[in-house]
Amino acid sequence: MSLYPLLLAAVIAAACVLLTGPFFIPLLHRLKFGQSIREEGPKSHQAKSGTPTMGGVMIVLGITVAALVAAPLNTELWLALFIMLGHFLLGFLDDYIKVVKKRNLGLKARQKLLGQIIIAIVTMVVGTRLLGIDTTVWVPVLDQNINIGWGYYLLVLFVLVGGSNAVNLTDGLDGLAAGTVAIACSCYAVVCCLTGHPALAVFSAAIVGACLGFLRFNAHPARVFMGDTGSLALGGAFAALGILTHTEILLAVIGLIFVCEALSVIIQVISFQTTGKRVFRMSPIHHHFELGGWSEWKVVTVFWLVGLLAGIAGLCLLQ
Image (cartoon, rainbow, N blue to C red; front, side, top):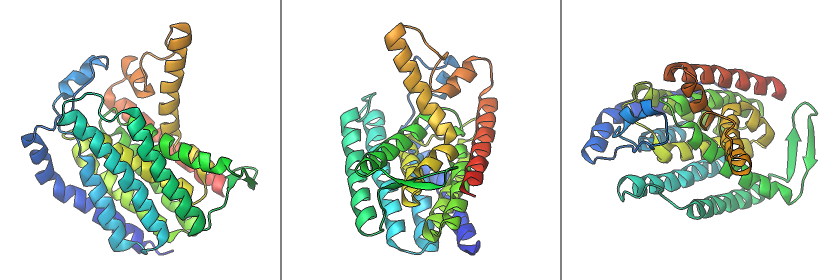
């Protein structure tokens, strides 16, 4: 596959974010769409209160425009866009309720889950009937496809819900989610090329470009946050890449940072509810290191490095 459409998509997506940022961020300021910082979080984060959120609108706009311009307009691409935009809508509603309606919890968990179930059902129907996705799972190292029958549909739901929420949990430090998603999707662009999915490769490149462009405004000290609007959309898009390339297990390897962030929350909750003790100083795990004395920038750069190593490991497994 030629590198031209990949570079074109990345450049268009980045340009969309960079050009809209100077107009959109002041608009968020005027609308008073500021981030509320939770009281139980690190005290240093209280200074970020009021920073504009919902910057994910710029990211999703950039990805969508770039993908439509540079990628082959096939069923795979439309389904990937549907998954991303479906999660974008859920995240936007969540942010809107929290920021505009002043309800701290946003969408109720069951409302968000219902939306993700609907997205998963559409994904399964289109994937199996139009794209020929079967119910097998490819296992790296063994290099075998194992048919898990109806369990595959539960796996798709798990990947979509887990992927979107894991990226959402990762979005807790300036530049952390945008950088790790850019690294993971750079690796997935290679996966898509090697497995014969050119449209998804371009889609991956568009995600990378949009995230890199967003870092111009989101790197420490952040001028804008992506909010659930961006993190759920990026998580859904990343999960879509794993499902549509039929590399669901590889997704967990390349997205190791997201897996660790989600697991840290699960472990913390289970430990506290069963023993009354916390395993980590605070979860998600990036706060554990922050409270251990690491600067925010050190946590972010170390996590980026780990994400890069995980991505390289994933590509080695694919080979």
